[in-house]
Image (cartoon, rainbow, N blue to C red; front, side, top):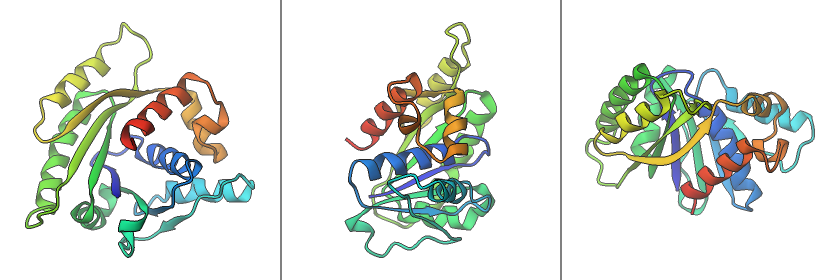
Length: 207
């Protein structure tokens, strides 16, 4: 299965999601190919940190402008890409089985998601392959009195053609530490709220 983690707006946390998904899948014993199409190369950098620190299992990430889809049917494929590589994004979406869209809780991020769906539709024009688009609220507010996360989820549910997961990743220091130390949240602090919420998300995405 080819899974593209993408969003039109920067700062959505797509590289953090891609890295943790990659580590989770490898930890499950699955064969995974990962491609970093973002010119910032965040996913590649964190994989390199992990390698230098000798953390196992090692994660292989190809830093490229265009992904290779050879033998994609036999392995899980994760592609991290943003609007800075728009052509690479379109090509990845054109071949994808699904697109995962992390959406921070704000109205501008909802607007960006609407525009991103137009890019997805244009990229899929002329293809007959079924595409699943999955969105969820990322970097959600941890305080129950703050309503932006609920409002964002409700707004996403009004957009056509997407599935909105009733699962959230919250704004936690653990996710920043995860990236700086080259360890997934469930490796860094198993049993924590951050680890539990991510494993619930990963399990929902890869049932």
